[in-house]
Amino acid sequence: MPIKETDLTDVIVQWGNKLIAISASYEEKGIEQATIVASEMLDRLYGFEFGPVLFKPTLSGGEQTFRTTKQGALSYFVGHDPHYPADTGFGIKFWREVKSETSAIMIECNMAMWMGWVMFTDKDGDMVKVDKSFGFRKSQSGELKIVLHHSSLPYEA
Image 1 (cartoon, rainbow, N blue to C red):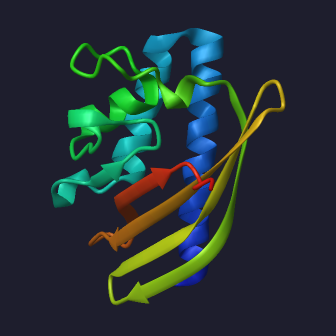
Image 2: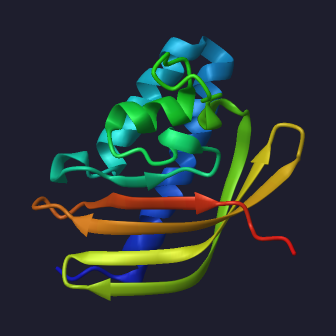
């Protein structure tokens, strides 16, 4: 079946729900459970089985700006990895809500791209808005997997 725009938005909603689940796990049961939930998220939604995932998280820099392995992505979401000492765990920031707004979508055969904004709201009601691009590849089983994840803070003049 061809990829539809609703398929992309469904995966982005799943991604946001998983991020909230990582935060909830951290709050309720600690870092070990949050790490399990984050690892499951990466297995379910990211295409590491295809090869390196092009992952550029919002809060990364220097030699560790780009994360092409599951270990690098997992560290970004939950921290606590001595190989990535600057990571504080984006997924354990007490997120309560994740919303997205689409700017553009491109679909071609078994690949698709999404670009837009994602808004994260924490337990205090503070909101962070980031520019985000996702690239997806359809697996043989028909699931969309993230193979490109680029995120940055909006430019301010």
